[in-house]
Image 1 (cartoon, rainbow, N blue to C red):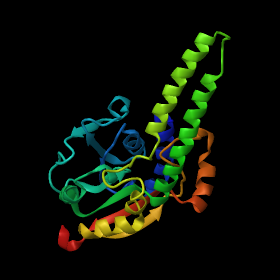
Image 2 (cartoon, rainbow, N blue to C red):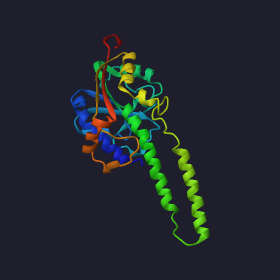
Image 3 (tube, one colour):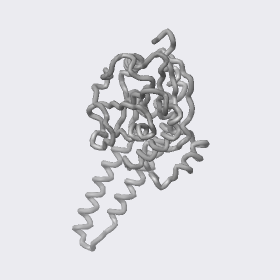
Image 4 (tube, rainbow, N blue to C red):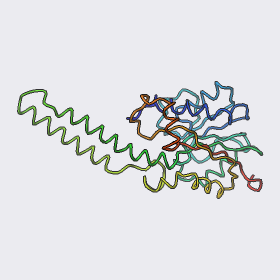
Amino acid sequence: MFSIEHLNRLREHELSHLLPYLVDKGRILEIGGGSGIQAKRLSEAGCDIVSVDVQDSCYVEDRVFPVIDYDGYRLPFADESFDIVFSSNVLEHIPHLDRFQAEIKRVLRPGGHCVHVMPTGAWRTWTSVAHYVEFGQRVGQVAWQMLPRTLSPRAILANARNCVGQLAGIGKAYLYPPRHGETGNALTEIYTFSRRYWIRHFERNGYEVEEASPMGLFYTGHMVLGSRWSMTSRTTVSRFLGSACVLYRVRPRADEH
């Protein structure tokens, strides 16, 4: 089940991998800041960072850092305002991404670059698997509720009807894993979240890809075990099941800036 606390732990762990790419590298713009937890930690580490997110972000009520609202299209900054544009698990949620890449380049200073953290095809695959694990958990919870707490036939029948209704709703909700991003479906995302796909995307939009490296942490979009599974174990498992995210460091080609 979703937990903002567990999500924050994952993101903060990933920040330890990101710090060398961001600390003392100039002025940073974070796109899709969410609750602002990463911007807060980066600011505490000495980064000069500004964070933006869309006005209807799901994390507005959880903000711990000043996140600037914007319309999702036009970044509210002058040309050549930042040395780095940073995002974490955001680009796949932008439906007009090709156009938005031009907006990112507009606010980058000459010589600037981008650091983007993106989910992987492995993350997509295991998230689909975890979708059905969570389905089993939900069914198990309802099955437990079906155990009779009273000997009254009327109460037993009413409880059974209620539980059957819940099971039908759960079955409908979990019939097929939903897509995570803005295009395709859970199956096609295995490819559209791959390194090959994103490298081609960046190159098509006028960037040089300087690095595309795994973050070295395993998790899925369903928090089946949550904090009960240590970061050390997740790091070890990522070597076999794949990293949840890849770090892309890209720079506008000289003829694009």
